[in-house]
Structures are given as C-alpha cells and as structure tokens.
Length: 263
Image 1 (spheres, rainbow, N blue to C red):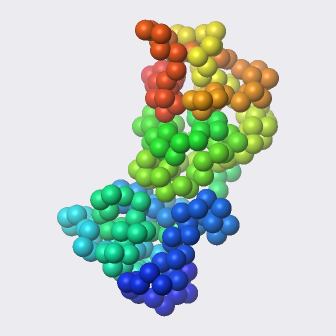
Image 2: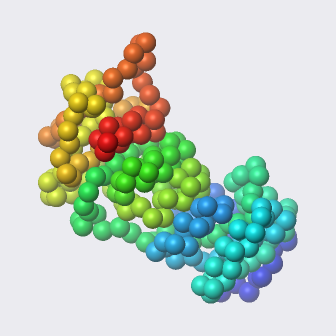
C-alpha cells in the first residue's frame, strides 16, 4: 500500500478504501498479512512496538482533544505514510460506533520466537470470541504475564476486535500460535509446569503454589480444554464456586487464574 499516491480518500470507489474493507475478512487479513488497529490507545501501543506500520488514516472531524494530533505527529516523525479520510469513508472503515479519527494499517508478519520463552505463559485454547481473547491479553499484561501462546487458534489474533479489547497491548506482548502438539512440545522442551484451568480439577487454585515457569491453559466456554492437554503430565486446577455456578466466562476465569498464580 505504500506505493499508492493517494493522500485523501473521499470516494467509495477508491481502491484503497476497498482494500481496507476487504480486511474485515479473516482470510484476507491472513493472505495479505495485514490488519488494522483503530483508536488512540491502540495506536499508541502500536507505534511503540516492533510491528511495521504501513499507513495511518485520519479524520480530523472525529478527533477528541489534542492527544490525537500529538500521536499523528509521532507517525509523521517516523516517516509513516498519512492519508486523510472523509467522514463518510471513515465511518465505513471504522469498527466503532464512536470513532476517534485514528486507524492504521500494519503488517502482521512480526513473530515471537517460542523457543526462547521464559516466565509464565497464558495459553488460550480454541477461544472463539474476539472480545474474550483480547480481554485475556489485556489482563495478562496487568499481572506481568508477557507470553501468550494460542493453542489451535480459532480466532485470528489480529482481528481488529481482539486488538480493541486488548487496548493495543497485543503489540507489546510475546504472542505466538500453533497446534496443541507444537505448544506441548515447546513447553516440555523448556521444562514448563502445565496447569489446566478445569471446573473438574482435583486441586483448588487458591491453594496451589506454581513453579517459576508455568503455563496456564484456559479453554473455550462451550467445549473446555482440548483433550491432548489432558494426555500429558499436568495439574488440573479448579476455581472454587458457590450457588451452583459451575461455569465462568472464559476471560473472567483466566483473570482469576492469573491472579491466584501471581499473587
């Protein structure tokens, strides 16, 4: 996209607008190895990261205060291409009801080396909802957990709604995805303690003391943790509950699990 000479987009026939709209589909984001990040906070995290930014799209009519202009100047100082977008076009490419006039196009090719991992890991296993996945990433950062390994990735990690719900913390987290067997092999090679957050677990997580390097696996609400994780050496940990509540939202369960293991 950097070769395009457009500096302003105001037509729905503009090919750059059509390209941005095509990125709403997961298969297009993956084939193009590009995605978009929307919002001031998200793009503040992005510009502080190692990801390559292709273009910044702005609409001054939606700016909120002076912070947006300061952020745009940071993009300019890094010689990142800036394109002004009309209000009607920006509303179409935005994922928000109340956009703030900042959207960037970035390359998703930056990868973490999973074999050099150290410290606790959160492993979302086949999490389907972008909001849950993004919230897990955001919460993990708050607990000082900087490693996120996706097991049998279902939701695209670079889905704009994952980026939004993580508030951009995805860009400064060690993120990697692979199959169950790939992750298990890496964890065993690096002598990780594998912990499964399981309602039927035989140990209360609040009474459990983890080792220095542990990996917490959290399953999807509907299906739970995938079978291969139960076929290896592990500790199954349960969250104590009352009033016949036997299931928690995945991101809530992950937050409780991370709190108990890091407190």
